[in-house]
Image 1 (cartoon, rainbow, N blue to C red):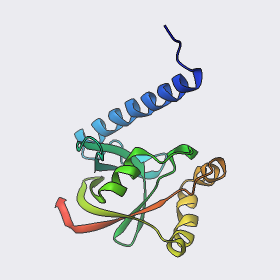
Image 2 (image 1 turned 90 degrees about the vertical axis):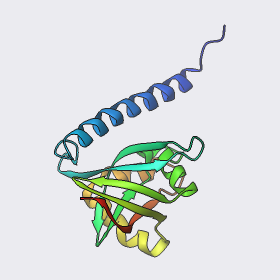
Image 3 (image 1 turned 135 degrees about the vertical axis):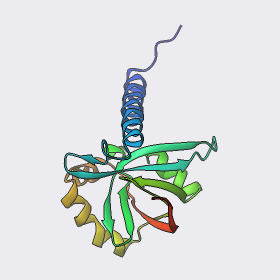
Length: 157
């Protein structure tokens, strides 16, 4: 019998904890129509539902966001990890997704911000959540700024 590598076990435990907290967050967000969960320490939170690139099943992730006109902006930081979050990998495979922001539900099309747009948006997201700059320093990868553009209006109000 082999013993799991402590680093792997630690990463496994970290991911399991994040997923558990996300499921609880999603549950209360949906049950209360965003009354609970649409804000975290004064910051806006949304639920992003993507299609799993391997499973084809819906996957929902609570994320901080900022508004940019009609668009919503999220950051694929994964806490400064050197790998992309699964939700971003799912969006790269299928950019259409669903969002719940408070009571508002809409279909969106995701795209990675270009260099110029990222330069404009990055200070705004850091102003909202300063830890993004820490995450950027912690990782070797370029953290994507993801723009969620409304596809064809709300799916529900």
